[in-house]
Image (cartoon, rainbow, N blue to C red; front, side):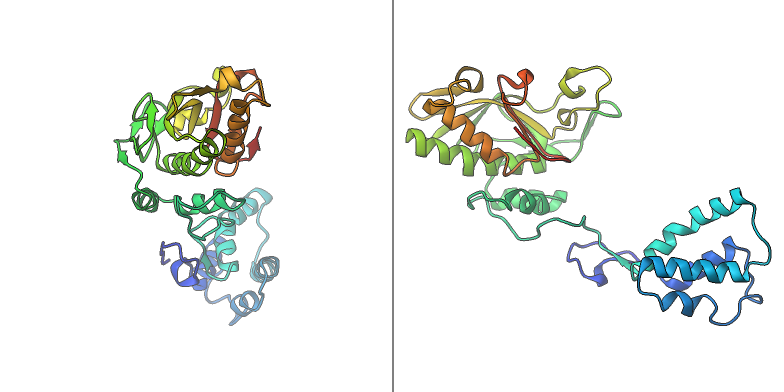
Length: 304
């Protein structure tokens, strides 16, 4: 088999499996000798089908016709399980993309306003370590890689780094997080937080107050619950911000009054986070988030 691994999405850069190899595997699985196989019994029947179901059915019929004796049920099931993955690969035309489907491959710059495509475009741009660090460098976001840290089976930080000050301080300073999270926080801060502060208060953001990123714990600190995204340094809890006019805005103190300028600001940056992160949780979600915004990268989609 030949393997290639860039992300162009073209067949020449995908996994390729010679169909002859699949046929040899079928011969071995069903004990079919070269002498017993009639010319073209398997190859043309399978290669002539263009859909997965058709290829599987043609292969199965040809194999059953030539099989001299029936296999016991258990052995037949085991052997089908062995050969099925190879057949699936071949049925896809000999090539499978190395990139997960559904990612928006259009580039995104940190200077672009947020819209409905921002999350998917950033996910693609930062899906590999090298491309993620290149994106941060192009955006002039200071990010210093750190050594991998494995605390337990569920608590591990891989390909992470510290987010440095870039005109805005983080308190506590230099939070450690994955590269994609650093990119997401930076895009959100510039296009949602900075923009809302200028529009509502006419002031600049000077500091982001947070409650941490990495923590080896389950979700909501509940024993037996699945590992939190914090256990992978893929989530950040935002407590509030400080502005150039000396104003301090905190989720705990100002969320409750949604009509006040501070409450409108917090809801605005929460809504902006929903365009960047897979999971955004605010005090509207539950009491556990009464004092912060939980911003998380991962599977699923929640915006509350």
